[in-house]
Length: 340
Image (cartoon, rainbow, N blue to C red):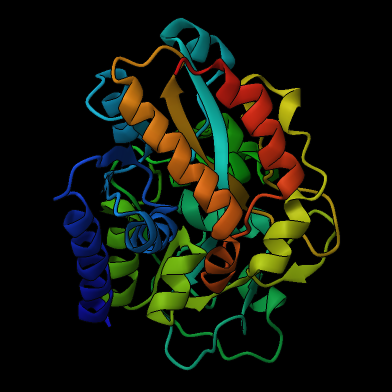
């Protein structure tokens, strides 16, 4: 399974690299969360327009560093940059796609979605306070299930990560102890003694697949591609839900995007009976006055095409495409600030 996953990533990277061999390449770097989506869009865009995309899936923190260093035309981050920092850097920020971060486990004998967990219990696992799968608190949430007397290994991101930012934002929202002792961030000090790091969503998925008794968090496209076992999660309305495009869309339904500078809203623990509790957007960062205006214009052409033509592809990977009303606002309110 690990080989299959790595092969999938390698093929996607090769597709991007093939596109980058031609003139008018678009360069970008950052979040691994949307990488499967960008790879799919890039392949279709290359076939239609002849323009390639060279996107480095290096993590959100890496994407922010690259755009600030002006080595790429756009940066990608799942942890939104603050309005103050955007102003200081002379950048704009807009969402490109919506998805969900999902708890995945390596437990023999259980189907995806068969086991349930609440946010507070999940926080205790990540705090290292629940260390066995047959712990009484987990057993109480899963009556009639024969949970194994097996150690829990916590798998987390080893690199600076917007996926980690959203995961820890969620844990902070459901656990006062987590909020007081760890908090949220793209990189945190993981308290559980059993913690193991992996680079990118790819690395976390690979480690969970490799380690029996492991639990980790990855974007849902990685769950689907690798047939991983996910946990149902209790949402803010007290309902247990499974991750998919419908529950991600439910979480995003009431989002007020322009209520925060740079559109950097949080959707974690959103209200609604069908809402997935760790839903998030992935954001694009660009300069208002780019050094290479032709390259910047190509980036906008790519995302304009993706917003218009990429909805079905997004749904195939269980991402949620942005509604037309929102993309119209992005064009008029955000892209209009970028000098041509």
